[in-house]
Length: 425
Image (cartoon, rainbow, N blue to C red; front, side, top):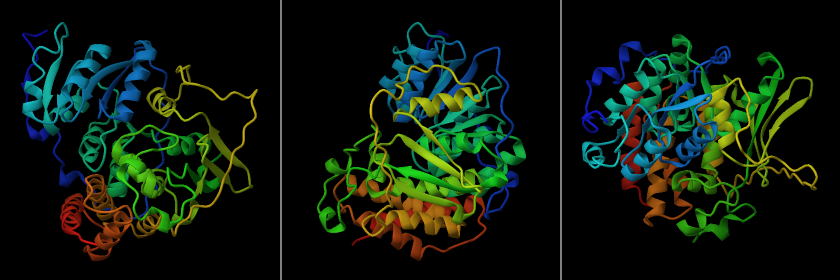
């Protein structure tokens, strides 16, 4: 180790948003994903933003399974989970790690014994990781709007982005996709639904796509009516029947807000019109989404529910290799069910479609309001049905701008958070 890990706070100029470099475009995107990558002779160097979260932990498992043959863990960033981050550093031996604040970074001392690793601090530290000339791919997996800054910095640095942070495109989709197009950056989806759409779209030309259909498990309350959910507890809402995820995304799945956010993400990621996107409930979580072409053909992507598969696909694209994931057993009978969502019981889904159609500042307002509403539900200060009510109130009362700058989106984000903190049913 270089005389022990060093906490650094590099100059902000490396990662701070540059308004002069941003377009004020906030209209329908027409970005197409960049050409596929050639297979690299050297392992791709991967930076994981949000490495101690559920996506980050699955990504570490992907790296460990690969064993350094095609992928190398180059940088890891986490919020304040020092012990978990240091364990990951011993597992993949990165060049550097970053923590959210100096107090957390100071706790690293002694936990990285035997490693030659740099320790950085804050947003500036994330900038150091993603801007490093040796970084090839950035996995953006920080939960919520906080993930936007790292994603933006990676795009500005010209890095391939494996995007697991849907809130980035919900809040600032047109700006992000315009920047990616201008910088020639490839954005590869990690959400299982968007990965499935991306894979299925390769079966035809973009102009031949009639619609995309995102599948949803329906969450823990599928089939229940609105009156039955008046007194549900956070513990009940966290019990997802299929996936094991962090608390925020688990609650979003229970309200169907997760699907609402994915609808908005799909619109900007794939340059679709609002009437080209639909949602169906699919409780088995085997069909991760599908694409319908103009000739009536429907192409779907199927696999057991395991986030390692879409993570690996994004990090190794366009290669496909054995990732150690379970596969479907075709010697057994399978039943795949599809049904329309109950939009009356789960009004969050309709909020997503509304925001997708409106664009502008609506996405930033919805996303920020939902993050705070979920936190309040988890701490018991509001009820389950109050989540969409609080989001509705923020959407209706925010000052809408159809063509915002990034600074304007950040102001809307801050305003919506304060509104929902003060909101009472």
